[in-house]
Image (tube, rainbow, N blue to C red; front, side, top):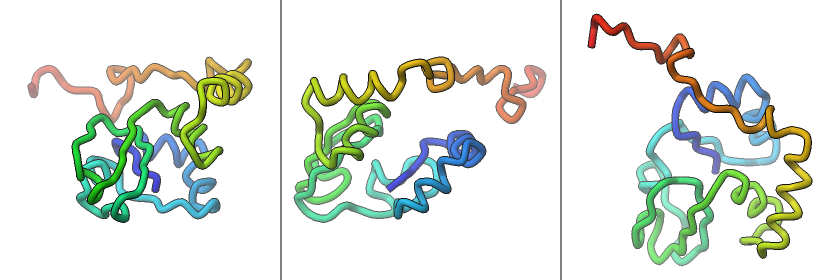
Length: 125
């Protein structure tokens, strides 16, 4: 399942071509926002293990007896690639080779004050 936290993130994934890659790989694409992390749109099967980039984790939040682990986008990518939570060595090897020479393209600070759709007119606040 792919569920971006916001419409802005979904739009960025679409512009960069990642949404189509996820769909081609068979991922289930969900509406952006608080949905899967709260079990709103769907719940996982009973007793499964989930790795999520969401921000909260409570017992039974995503499904009955679900074992939910939270972490970074990088760790999520490694988990998805390996089909399991990696060892420290597996993580460091995969992430360092994946980001080498690409850090400026990968890690972009979201300057909300520079994004037209998110700028706020001070007079209306």
